[in-house]
Image 1: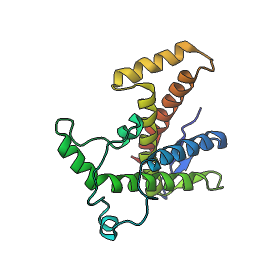
Image 2: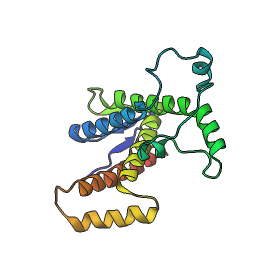
Image 3: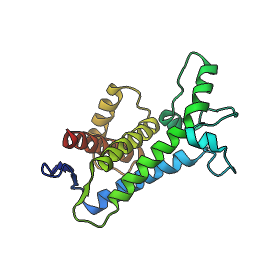
Image 4: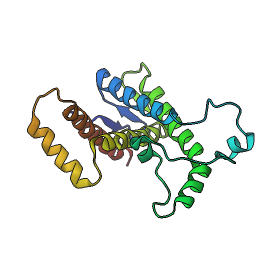
Length: 191
């Protein structure tokens, strides 16, 4: 199995060497995370304050931590010790953070859906994909209950021991492993 990403030295672009079906899975995962980020946002809640849009924050409204633990992992509290600080920081930053994450995910999805063979990513597209892979892995890690590096290593060993099975946790864990490898390969290609 070859590397999923390779840097073209002359142009600095990143060549995506994933088969079409694997690229489609990655596009789906990136799109799903973007949908998760849409849930609970106020983008469709009516007119927004133009100043709030300009500076990327929600003015004059209380901020609430996301109820979905995976989204909360993408949009963590700034303070675990002081609820007031956490709420104020969320109020001032969450809107902009959601926008930046969705923008990166959209850039990565659009690039990966190009009909080119192979797809090549400009540096900004490769960086958007790298950030998107991080977000997908955070969501999967939360769904799998991974908190520490040791948890991921134990999960990797459990997947290998489980062998070929259709059990959902094994499929999700194997997907997490593959995404980890893809992310490491992309980082290597970018450096």
